[in-house]
Image (tube, rainbow, N blue to C red; front, top):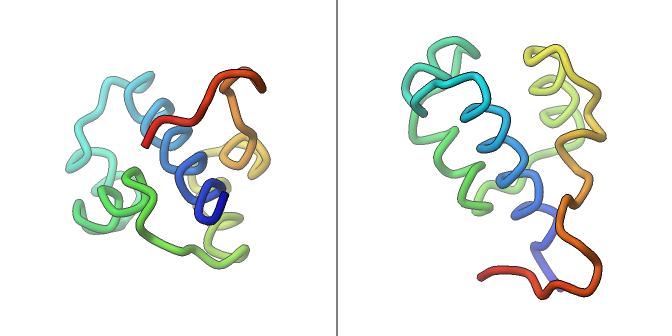
Length: 80
């Protein structure tokens, strides 16, 4: 499905932020981004380059594949 990777990245980024107990604004400030940019990523509407994904993962101290891997079971339909 077109755009599913963007939505997966957004879900994973949101989950990471929530595990840290941070608001979008706090998270964005910590990473040096604007809150609306983080919001766009989390909503799956930002189409990031691979370099941007690598950079974001580096800033978070995680492997970039953690942001791209789907955490939904294969038989569960994606949420819109």
